[in-house]
Length: 153
Ligand SMILES: [Zn+2]
Image (cartoon, rainbow, N blue to C red):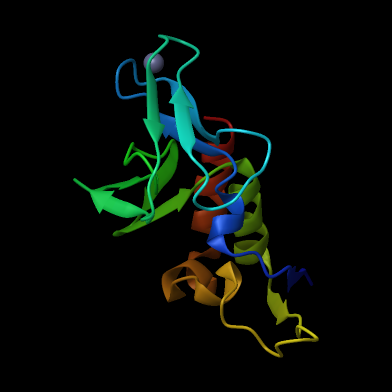
């Protein structure tokens, strides 16, 4: 039996490095926080190492959005690198750490959540907010296959 202990990550914990498709040359680029400290509203910059394209973000509103059927990054609105269709649904991840986390969640046959000592059972973590299709046992093998394909993209 595979167990998955939800480490309590929120989606925003993965925004320290976001993989996107460069809007100019379509190669894999990163949206990174500017400066050594990392927080949600830290300024971000996309710098493409392939073609030199650059784009910066500063602001107070962030959120992943679906645009023309593709999931986009929460800062610059560029197409996320790690995404693939699973039937009618879209599986996406901000980076490889996020993808690994999704895989262990999906692959787990027994899911557990850890009770936070201060706040009790939390419903804020990513694992507790995943859509039902992603956690449905019938989809498990198909989703794990898609995740493994994405990993080597
Ligand atoms: Zn580029």
